[in-house]
Amino acid sequence: MSAHDIKSAERPPPDAALVAIAEYARNFKVKSPGAYETARYCLMDTLACGFQALKYPACRKLLGPVVPGAVMPGGARVPGTSFELDPVQAAFNIGAMIRWLDFNDTWLAAEWGHPSDNLGGLLAVSDYLARQAVMSGRTPLTVQELLSAMIKAHEIQGVLALENSFNRVGLDHVLLVRVASTAVVASLLGGTLEQVVNAVSNAWIDGGALRTYRHAPNTGSRKSWAAGDATSRAVRLALIALTGEMGYPSALSARTWGFSDVLFRGKPIVLAQPFDSYVMENVLFKISYPAEFHAQTAVEAAMTLHPQVAGRLADIERVVIETQEPLYRQRRAGVFPRRQREPARPGRLPDRPPQTTRGRHAGAREEVRNIGGRSLWPEAGRTDQDAVRDAEVARCIAGERAGGRDGDQRPGGLRGASVMGLLAR
Image (cartoon, rainbow, N blue to C red; front, top):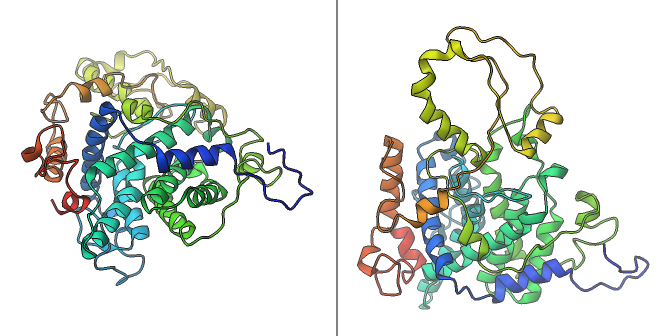
């Protein structure tokens, strides 16, 4: 906790974590080819997730201006729609699309989450800045700069997740989306170091959403728009900071009133390692199934084994499930109540509460790394949904081939293209 004398009105220096986040977001130069390569795949994958979500009325009904008619010609565009909105509302729209189907990337550590959720704010602000630049005769942001912003947002969210478990205190991981997006968006907007620190301090002061909408008996669709809400709030906080609005230097560590004392059981926020490009280089993609990442191997095994057991369900004596420690904690807390074992009845399995199985898709990254110039998804077991998703990827990179598969700096390349050109394709 802060060693600041609570009897003194003198403001303390900013918490070290606030400064580290702000300095990284504002000043770090990404040099890793592997990070850029993965960020490029991540951008395509994340946009495809958003395009697929547009097929669902439950998602579409949340999109558009905050009230009818509150559009902004020349503002940020929402991919796959005709909306042009202020960047705050556009960030919500894009963020909700990205997360709606639970199909975008994943990071697993003490806290888990989906770092590409940050693209809601990053893409909205990048497109807004690019369009404003063109209208004033300046050079617009390039996709290379957007990829750099993605790498930084991934890194901030992922490193914070390594040893800080917010789910243990009942807080949702979208808190990290708000913090990461705030830092990187404030930097994209040209904020000074002080302004970025101020913005990030306000992101922490906002506290965290409760996880209750992810668990019985309150499970609901907020899970699908919570990240959009967080990245949208980040854009708002960044814009506020750039007006010169003050920040709160010991937002994390202040005794009694800081984040750690109020919401984190007195534990400090830990940065387990220096910020670099580690998270983007090691992020996990959901290659096959739109499901909780912990369950990917379980679903894959079930789909593989189903033909062998479908006709012999009555022969199953019992089902033994191994699971992760987080789910075990949830069951102990009463999220999944214990039931008496039921005997198997012909034609069906015993009635058991839903559970995931242990492990993660260890080959996910290798699948992505080894595909070369081929489709992002393997051909085996393809469905109509896969084909639609691949088609959407093809749409968003339609002009890339003229610039080379690696997204080089030539005029037709993905990295050298403007953000405006990306959304116009």
